[in-house]
Amino acid sequence: MKHRQFAALPFRIKSAQLRILLITTRGKRRWSVPKGSPMLRKRAHRVAAIEAYEEAGLRGKISRHALGHFKHSKRKGKRRIMCDVKLYALKVTKQHGRYPESGERDLVWLPASEAARRVHHPELRRLIQSFSRQQRKRR
Image: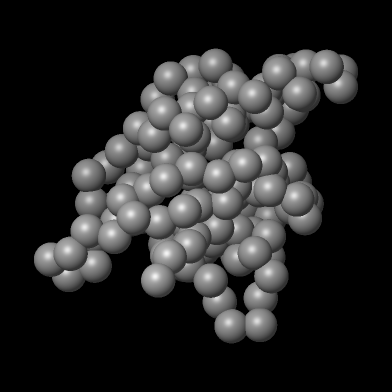
């Protein structure tokens, strides 16, 4: 069975610059994006938006179409499981100070180039760089 997860790429434009929000993972404290497993009767992009709120207090407009996907290894008990993670752009309109996982992770807003350098997964790094190029063309 293939394991799937859905993730949000939280972004905002500030002073004409694309900024990406990264969060730390709970275990190894590596920089990543909010992600989670499928939920009953919820479409993939909705799951990504829910995870962004639960893990970082973010609300906004989530894209219905994935930017792409990356592989992520997660631990389930003593086993390591490979997950295919679909990534959805989330244009952040509000960031709450209190949310379900507040205090469990660090959060940071960074310019897209710096965010790409900090993330652990090379495939996620490429997706951030690609998204940044697309946003530059739109402006």
